[in-house]
Length: 209
Image (cartoon, rainbow, N blue to C red; front, side, top):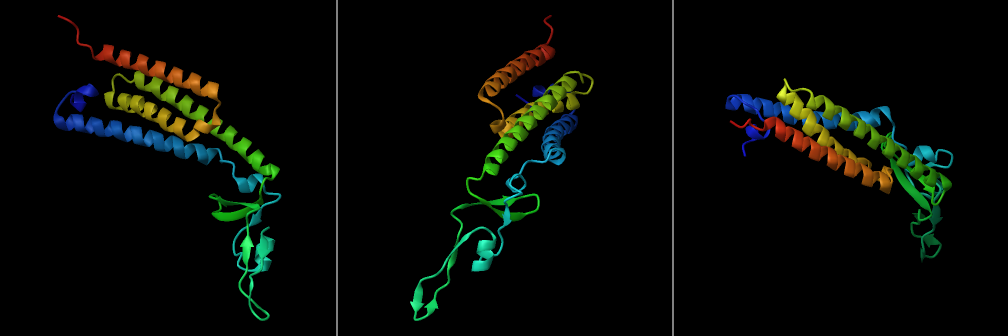
């Protein structure tokens, strides 16, 4: 099946290619726009912020002073000669070492601290809300795309773009929604896509003579 027939484009080869380019561009840009907009307007929780009261910078830990200042435990080196000790090391086994992408810094948090549980809960709420935003944009894009009959390239771009967005958004924010939500949303999405396929098929159906 030719791509022009798949998207029901008519005209010369150059016209069909132009329309296909517009469709693909809308698909890509719609997904990029949503996935950039969500963290821009809704900041993702970080371990460093959730544990601000106990977090310590984890930078140069080559000496005993900097190691203990960061919350680590300094272990002295073994004696290698009379009154001479080898270099020790910083034991961070009791710490949670995290990297904050916002300020591009590394921090140390006491392992098992309650703030880490709070961070996990905040992250799940963020991912849940992110998924619902993706779902709302998916429905809106689908409705708009289905009603742009006069502009096939824009119509198909939004329709297929919304489907790709639903898939990418589900993968990105999957952990933030519960099992029943996952089951219900996947069933609903499958039903919408089947309905969409039937509707588009009827629109392209040639009238019988």
